[in-house]
Image 1 (cartoon, rainbow, N blue to C red):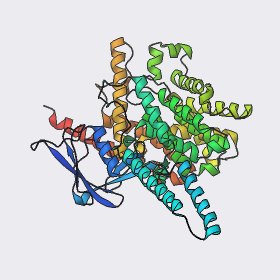
Image 2: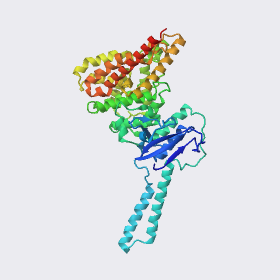
Image 3: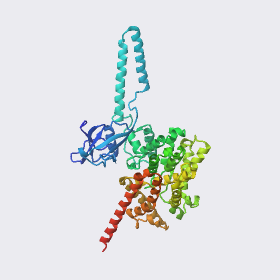
Image 4: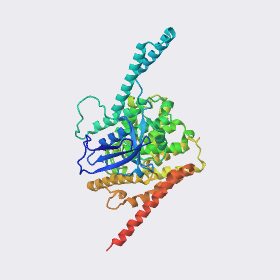
Length: 509
């Protein structure tokens, strides 16, 4: 081991009592084998700080830990102990390009000394002692500066000020401002090529990324598709827009900011997998990605059926016609109406109209009440699909947003299944409220009648497979990426459903 044992216990790293339970974590970082001993009372912040030190990372850099099979594990006190044969891999996946860059003043001083030395050498043929001393002092100062910077990154050199205390839980406003600060600190980081490539695939695991990190990845998506260059979007305006979008997603089980990120990331991946960058105009790609980002803004956690039956303000405002989707659109353009968030402000009037019209169509298409109508339209044009045909492109854009919206089952099971738990929790919350208020109970949301396997087998068989199959006919490359995983998910839940039914039969009196 290059460092030996790194021990952490509690907030101050005080050595544990001999009887205290600890666990050993083996990991590789920068090509070196390391190990850490975590005390039973260490906090999440303690653990993250420990691994940040081990990776020589700055406080705002993004670290990820991987198992030997490449899957991401959460850096937390719940980290499973392992052996030297099954070590974790610790990586800094986003960092500054020039981590220890010297201040301009120091570089200028060094340059001027070199210039002075050259002139003196030309005139006298030797370097005076005073110049040698000055050069030595500059070098010494640079080493000290690097050392101080390095120590501050490791958390060993703190800014002066009162010690931090563990206060009460942050309010929603404070939490959002903390996310904003983290996001802006991280926004100049260079995300590794490995993560950028992984971001383009349906197997990306959202669960190991914090809100600020997801905002950085969303910024990467907009940047890598050339939107900032083509549409003259200032980086700070994009950052304000992304942060406002984050703030307008509610803290509910399923239709939250993480869902927004997943849908946008799937859309981003599909754009790359299907080579739509070379098939559609950049403005249409912007419509699809921004629609995915905004498609569930301010979702209350209760669907359209509930809104209409309960005669909510949204249902009354939109005359029972896709009340939620109309609301999502209105919130999106409310954010864009703020000058500091308006990523469309440099577009022509015609371009703005095109984007507004396209986003409204795409977001309204996510109302599942219109599912068969839109799918049947796509089926009718798919055999003769023409990328030059405006109507054909409009239908495809709706389909792409719809596929992205309900694509969880195309992801690996360890990513997809927790999303199903979140969805069922939101469904059950709605049916419980419907029962309390004496409203019609939505059948597929009733906790007394629905199980995890039964909810999925029907949805996959009658909604996902027909939709994904049709898109795969147009883009055969998607078969392995989204169609086959969904077919495997159907087998998994069908087997689970049979097992549950068999158990019910054997347990009957």
